[in-house]
Image (cartoon, rainbow, N blue to C red):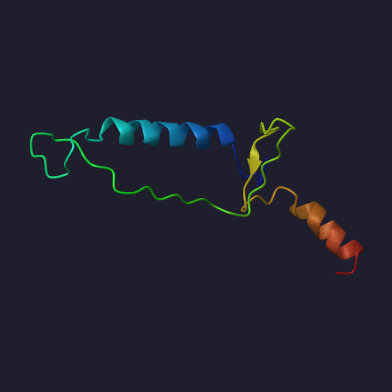
Length: 89
């Protein structure tokens, strides 16, 4: 549909799981960060970010009911214009 911008929230969960698995597989279990025997990394922090102005409809078990509508979705622009003109806004 023209103007639709949606994503499956399961894709977000899968991406986080994938990244966390990669992070954990690269962690060093050495007792000291300066242990030169290990070529793995020591985790020093995790940054989290997310986009806003999206809509995720959930059921009572917090499962998504449909793909998430993103901020840039203009699928209902004609309906929006009709409401605006009808309401004199």
